[in-house]
Image 1 (cartoon, rainbow, N blue to C red):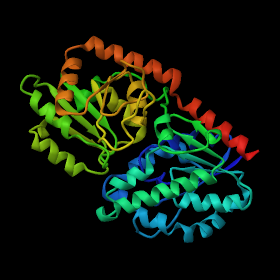
Image 2 (cartoon, one colour):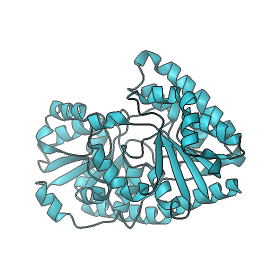
Image 3 (cartoon, one colour):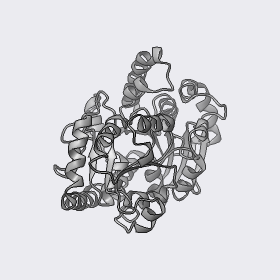
Image 4 (cartoon, rainbow, N blue to C red):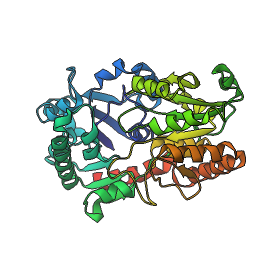
Length: 395
């Protein structure tokens, strides 16, 4: 099977995503080509070469075309894609593909889907985020234009849903935000590679980072607009006199590194906050293993506070696969007792204190978390579901 992919993220210059895992597994048996946004500005925020180094396994022998080589914003790249996709599809020899996978794209993916439909090639639309809401809070969109951007995003999302043969949602929370025909829907959750993410010894790296004997609260990921460290830093700042061995480790730098440093300084914990920066994806498990407690401090946005069938970002699956207890500010899809929840400063204080003082509880949460990932959130299983959907449509 020959799969044409359109993507809202730059697979070479961006952090690891579910699409990288889709491609890494699918390329074993299928030919894949990708048309995606050009995240040229990432090099100003992070060492994007380290991202590329971590994606080597997924992207080797994959043809990737950018919507443009011009240094324009992703919003403009999407808005002008109606003009540019025709040329790019010709370069990719679009008529040879059997199926189109549109990953999280609103405008460029739609125009590719229309072109592919004209030659009877179907589309699977993979929705991994609340895209209109992301436009509503995106710093790439001028503040005065954000309500209009959200409206346009919702309009285009519905057009994509209508044109797609199947829609894959990352969880039922995202599915319930939109009206999609039930016969088109398939749930494909995020997962972890449990052969890469597993509990391992951390003494050497902890010594190297000056963390020997410390209680480490950690975070891995970008510091984009959906991440909010403020209540975490406030809680730790209020706890350090009583628990002087608490340290914070932040792995990643894209987005708001300066803002995050300033927040840590504001609460008097900059000297006990270690900023690692960007690391290759294959080294992420080593840093997670240094952590006693992992964070998902997402800001609350409409549609994100899910119920029992909530969200499972990649970092959650990877934390749990490494047998780490997790504090999340959003309801996740994990069974009760695996993830602790906090949003306010006082809630973070209470949960951190409880877990600090109870190593056995931390161990139990971690073990149950890995068991849950092994049983329900493994990439091989998720991609197998996607592959089956793609094959059925292509046939």
